Length: 294
Ligand code: SF4
Image 1: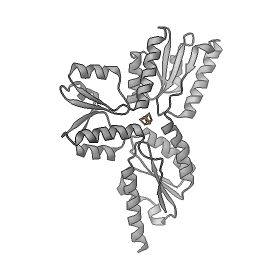
Image 2: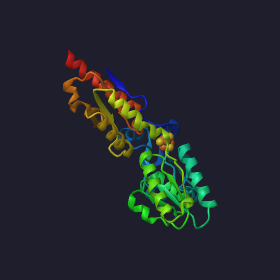
Image 3: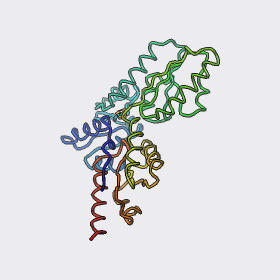
Image 4: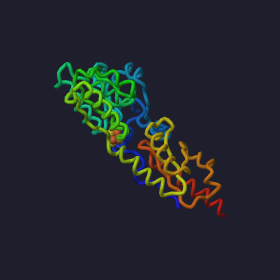
């Protein structure tokens, strides 16, 4: 039996961004998108065939009098400013959850004193983090590793927020570490923390672990660039050592399970894996098995 995990696939933020692009492209030849609309090469290739043109920040700076899509990760205020300067119309598909977080950080920045520090737990250089730090006039501190904790001044107040796709467990450890360091200076009350991790992603780790344990073999489908994909695959592999990572449908042919003809195969993926790709993997497996059984 071959089953696709019902929890895998795009979250609503990514679905909304893709649908927005598709809708626009039904009446226009092309649409620029600032950065990869989703970290999945197969889906980007499909949308590129429809007319989506992925551009870099440098490309964006050189555009005038055109239309650009802002993807689910969101953008810093500088992007909106540059667009208005260059008469670039923005179609804003920032995920509502990210937008809400941007507003909270902006409000915190504007309403706390100059003495206050804003900390963002996230990946340096990630588009969402750039958008969040942008709300603080670039004054916020990105905490990506333990070393970054030394950037905090424990004699001043600090408010911690998290990029929406970070690990809940690691965030809890970080909160404890920072709390302890404030406590050492008797400044516990200076530190506030806000768990802003998106539960759609956070719940996936538990769900995918359960799914992996329920099958003889697991095929995990994801783009190689997707950090969420690598993270979830790691959970799969630990829960079920007979788990395999693929990015393209054709890679199914090379998997050892195709020879062994497993009884129960589970197909799952990252938040950036399109459902159509997992369905194609399932189809390919059925086709191979029908030949093997013939
Ligand atoms: S993971 Fe959550 S916050 Fe991020 S785009 Fe998806 S729904 Fe939005």
